[in-house]
Image (tube, rainbow, N blue to C red; front, side):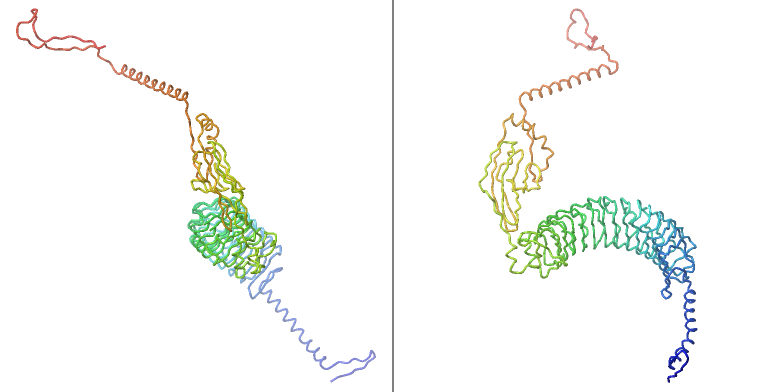
Amino acid sequence: MIVARKGKGGSRTRTAMEINLSQNVAWLLPFFFLLVMVNVWSSQGQGCPQRCDCIGKLKTVSCRGKRLSTLPEGIPMDTRILDLSGNKLRWVEHGDLLPFLRLERLDLSENMISVLEPNAFSSLQSLQSLSLRANQLKLVPMGTFSHLSNLTSLDLSENKIVILLDFTFQDLKSLRKLEVGDNDLVYISNKAFLGLVGLKELTIDRCNLTSVSSQSLSYLHNLVTLRLRYLSISTLEDQNFRKLGNLRALEIDHWPFLEFISSHGLQGLNLSWLSITHTNLTSVPTSALRSLSHLTSLNLSFNPISVLESWALRDLLRLKELHLVNTRLVTVQPYALGGLRQIRLLNLSANNLVTLEEGAFQSVNTLETLRLDRNPLACDCRLLWILQRRKTLNFDGASPVCMTPVEVQDRALSAFTDSALFDHFTCQKPKIRNRKLQQISAREGQVVSFICRAEGEPTPVIFWISPQRRRITTKSSGRLTVLKEGTLEIRYAQVMDSGTYICIASNAGGNDTYFATLTVSGLPLDAALMANRTYYAGDLNDTNLNDTRVFLKFTLDLKTILISTAMGCIMFLGVVLFCFILLFVWSRGKGQHKNNFSVEYSFRKVDGPATSGGQGGARKFNMKMI
């Protein structure tokens, strides 16, 4: 129904619906206001502090970044999650948290806390997670974490803690995760981790530690993951982890002083995952890895490992993932991956590899993912095995790219068609140039050189075989060595060096051989003596990896023999004279000697009268001993 009214100011029309609506709103306003007041009162009834945010259903109070210098008032006693991070709190006293018996998570990170009183958290027996990250703590007193029997996660990182004292964590029987990194730690006491019987994950990084003793780690029997990052440790002690029998993952990262791992450095471990990155290791620690027969993943990235040697990983029979990223890797030798029968992923990206031959693998049939990107690859027959598997092999979104030859430069391996494979991915068998026979006769002590030049695609490797069937390469040292261009150099030639030498030029396309003959004659007597004086003494320190033996000759002339004989005689006579003098002095000084003695004797009786009127019988006379 429409009602019209007319007045001086004009007419105004209102519907009955509008009238009823205005009347109803007028009646509802008091109820709406009352509802808002009830909600506000209810919120205040939960005790949500000013400047904090509360979620009643989750029992959560968040006071993050409110510049609080003290614990705010009005926190509900039934709060389960309390966030006080990003404030200006300076200490935590025993009575501050006493009312919050139901608290399960407490975040005190990014404050200015420098002092923790003993038993500061003892009333929080329901606490499961505690973060004290990024404060000013220098010391954690014994008893700080007493009665926290349900605590499972503790973060003490980014403080100024200098030492972890004995029994610091002895009451944390249920702790699963502990972080103490980014501190000023210089020492961890032998019993600092005593009581952490349930610890599964430990992180120690960015500290001043120079060692982590096996004694301190020996209490972590159930540890599963250990991260040791950004430390100044230069060596791993023998059997340093011997009592961590349940450890499955070990991360060693950014140890710039670590250059070598002894054969017993990882003994006692039963790892599945090992990462040793950003250290100064120059080779794969084969002997140390020998005991890790259950290892499935190995990461040796960002180490200066230029050569992956043959059978370097032969004992890792269960290895499935190998990462060697940015290690300056130049060569992967034949059977470098020998023994890896279950390899699934190989990451060799960002290195200096020119090729990766199929002969480096035990078997390529198990390989699923291959990363060879960011390497200066030469696309020839050595990479043909990759091209043949390019449709099934996963390059993880980073296909390898050819660097040479020029006609295929910057082309991805996955972009080649089947018809183009044998047009580009071919090799030329080596051919030795200038095959003129070299027959050299030399005297002992001379330097002898045999030239061997070869061409082929790819560039062949040249090495020599000695008459004693020893391999001589560019890496050999001592008297026999091969120069970079393939020339064999023999310094201070010996008679034993005589014989036939074989030059072998080899590449993926095949081999070529060449023969050279050397005859070395001995020197005259005087010349040999001079030769011995000039170079043999200086050659004592040379190490010959080819096992070439060096014999030293010492030639003696007549003058030397006479002088040696005279000196020997003089010394002999002097010794004899000295002995006689000793005997004489000894005999003269040995007690009193009797110079006279009497001898009594009887003449044999003769029949008949005595001669000259004398009688027979006993006679005496004296004798003087001179």
